[in-house]
Length: 387
Figure 1 (cartoon, helix red, strand yellow):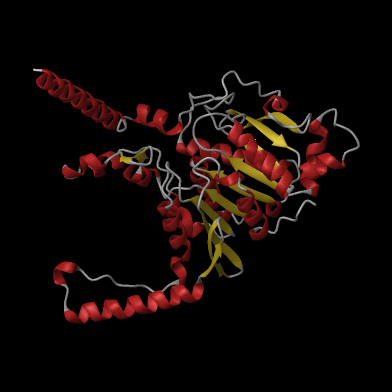
Figure 2: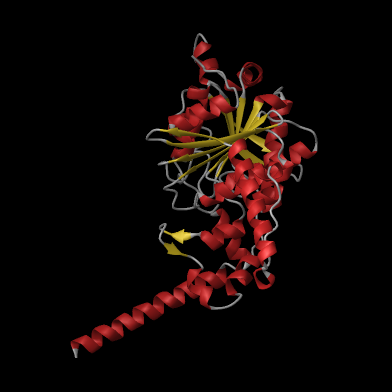
């Protein structure tokens, strides 16, 4: 009797979980819920943030300017401009108003234009740790914005909207006197999709930033959905694989795709991709795909034969082409093992570097604040040591 009751309860809970799972998957196909699940802009951590008081979140007195940037479509973006620590320490006293120091700091030091991931705000602790690291260890200024619909910014997030916001931030820096080649664009997680789209737009127009940094990136949101695992273990769409076409139908319903892989050929400047092996949110395989896409134009084509019409001759041709491809790839790449830290793989193309750093640790949110990552950024993009 007790066993029967237990089995019925288990059956009930499994049915409940199955129903919740099905409801979640269906909701992901609805643009309204999809948007909220992707951006999570309603999660405004820290709650009731006082953006006019950046000191409250760990930044030095009057080192950070709280400002608002107007976009071409008339939205208003909340932002922080953090002075280079080298510049800040050179002052004889704490500045009465950081606003008056922005143009001079921009003239003297490179600036990191930082695009954060989904959820939370520019005052969230892990993001402040990024600003502190860039300002102190790299000696750069930092401009960090909150996209439309986030924090104290107006509007509603969308893929095109976020790219417009990014361009408005870039233009603001130029208006303050920044040179193109003194702006390093850094994106984390969702921000890598924004960064890639902005970078492609800039290079299309002949504008050349100092470089592009992609921290914990993805190839596209469609691929994230295909590879996402709850807690790094339970796959989101795997249970649906038994139903033909269902996973494809769900990914095709994605409205905000941020297809970074598609715009890779348009990004012409130096690039650093970094990913941690223990990233539970976005698998590091996404970074492998992006890095290979940057390298693809340098490698010979390999014609993959159709398995249905495979002949001995076509197989031998494929094997020979594959061998040439492997040899050429080995000639192009340089790999360095950094003991207890990770692996750096890189190549050069017409004077620009493309570098992939795979770290052993750092997870999803803390990758960019590791000193080893900061040092590699400084080396790749020739950011002078601030001491």
